[in-house]
Length: 88
Figure 1: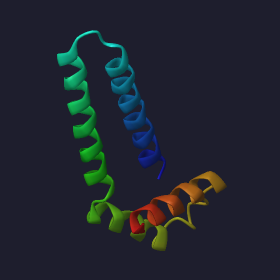
Figure 2 (figure 1 turned 90 degrees about the vertical axis):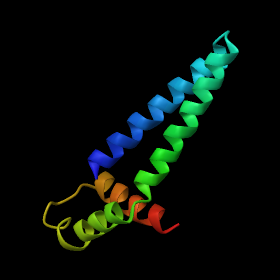
Figure 3 (figure 1 turned 90 degrees about the horizontal axis):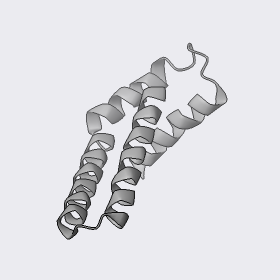
């Protein structure tokens, strides 16, 4: 669960960097390339986080293991949010 959260944070950081550079870069072709990169990154992120096998692995973990690992409140919330987000 923490790994997924860290990955999400890193993807968001990268997206923010692309966006910031896109907004201020003086060259049109660079701004267009950054827009294309943002779109590709967003599509890859959606594909990854909506992957049925990933969801099933997290759901199996939630069903079988998470109680024995004594997840703290934040990790429990992350786990619930991931599962709920997949269903949305």
